[in-house]
Each structure stands twice: as structure tokens, then as C-alpha cells.
Image 1: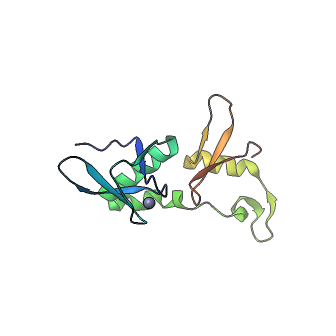
Image 2 (image 1 turned 180 degrees about the vertical axis):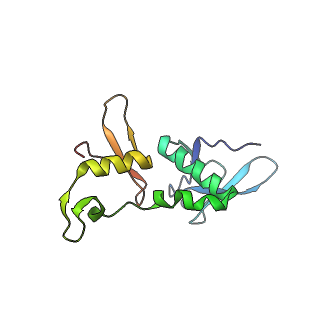
Image 3 (image 1 turned 135 degrees about the vertical axis):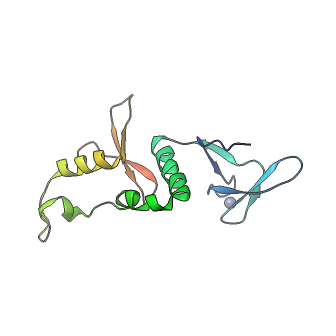
Length: 132
Ligand SMILES: [Zn+2]
């Protein structure tokens, strides 16, 4: 049986992600981090960035030596990193943020609306902010 990597399985009770717990003769049981067991987790389709993140996670599991390649993706640079003067935090340049995002693939553009969404890894959500 192959896992469908395009789907995220969520606990129907608390909406947290579930992991495969055990299989009985009929079905597969899943367990979330809060300990709820379910045989019918919510199936949520992954968006582009989640598929991307999942690929990275899988790759890192199989090739821990690749970790160094991905380290830069784990942290957003500080605000100061985009300033002319990082000490004083003056001369902030939004274009540098845009470039950084482009280089780090933490963005996507909605084809319908052309709105640019920024990935907020800490929250795991997309922020809509077309100004930068
Ligand atoms: Zn739960």
C-alpha cells in the first residue's frame, strides 16, 4: 500500500495531524498527538508549499546529510537582515525580502487573483501581503 503524499490526514476531533497507529482486519487506525483514535481521518489536500515541505522532510529522513541544504529554509532572516544598516535597522528594502522569498521558495502566487501569499512557517499559514 502506498501513502498518498498529496493528502494530509487530520484528526476529526481536534484537527491535528494524525499518524498511522495500527491496522486491524478491516481498516487502518490513526492516532493524533492528543491521543484521539480514528479510522476516518479528515483528508485535506496539500497545497504547493506543503507538498514541497513534505518532499523536503522525506528527503531528509532518507538522506540526513542533506540537512545542511535545507537549514536556510527553516528560519526567516530577521528584519535587520534586509536593512542597509542592520545595527540601526534603517534603510529597510522590501525588494530584498522579495528576492529572499524567491530564492527560498516560500511564496506562491494565486493564479486566479495574482495575489502573492507569503508562507509563515511558524504558523504554517499563508499571509496575504501584496505590498512587499
Ligand atoms: Zn485529536
